[in-house]
Amino acid sequence: MLTYTYISKGEFGLVEKPKPTIQHEGDAIVKVTLASICSSDLHIKHGSVPRAVEGITVGHEMVGVVEEVGSAVTHVKPGDRVTVNVETFCGECFFCKKGFVNNCTDKNGGWALGCRIDGGQAEYVRVPFADQGLNKIPDTVTDRQALLVGDVLATGYWAAKISEITEDDTVLIIGAGPTGICTLLCVMLKNPKRIIVCEKDENRIKFVNEHYPDVLTVTPDECLGLSVRTAITAVRMWCLRLPEQRTPSSLHGSVRDRMPSSRWWRFTTRHRPCLCLTCTERT
Ligand SMILES: [Zn+2]
Ligand SMILES: [Zn+2]
Image (cartoon, helix red, strand yellow):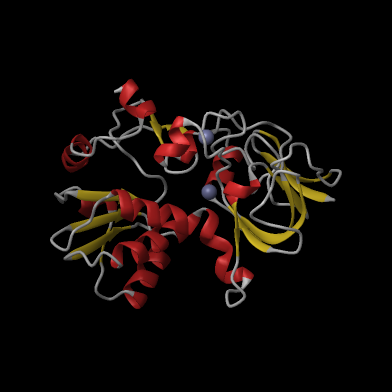
């Protein structure tokens, strides 16, 4: 089958590979019908994901039809239409039990698909821990409608959830790409007093202004004067992070990130301690 593969830094290409097979009893093979592209794929291409393995097929958010399951898989069966979660996770380790599945300690845990093991920009994908990472799509939902469940929409939902937004809050969302828009939709469910979206791309600003007229759009420069309690980066979620530290991302493992040094940013980050042990051990 043809796969879209990370060949080396700066180079992706179409590579012929054999169809994946079941390797463990918890695996499932999914025939991919749609797969999304994420900015994290570009980070791999640019060489900024140290754990990415050269030669892996990229793609970590897919929908498809279950083709085959291992003997231990009970939640899905061949023929089921499913979403594939970006995270593979055991469901049993300390972090999984606390809900921080991106820190799953299994060697295939966290962001493995399309980073450390072959992902879904291909005809078929092998999904470890299929009972955890596959969700059946209801008959009333199309593949296209369900596509963003595994990563983009989940990121926005998680961001809105852990931000503990109240109706008295002003929420700042940084970035209005697909994840930013999904974050915006999820934040709107919390009905905060005000929502501000920071974005520099004119087309994205126009989209937000047209579709969400109650939302204030600002540019990064205009952001410098803001003071808010709740800020969400829609590219990845931050917790307590300092310049040049490795910090946990919402879904894709830890990343090295240079912090903006504006006063409001330091203020908000100082007041957003992370619950993740990986993070608190480092800070
Ligand atoms: Zn992603
Ligand atoms: Zn785990």
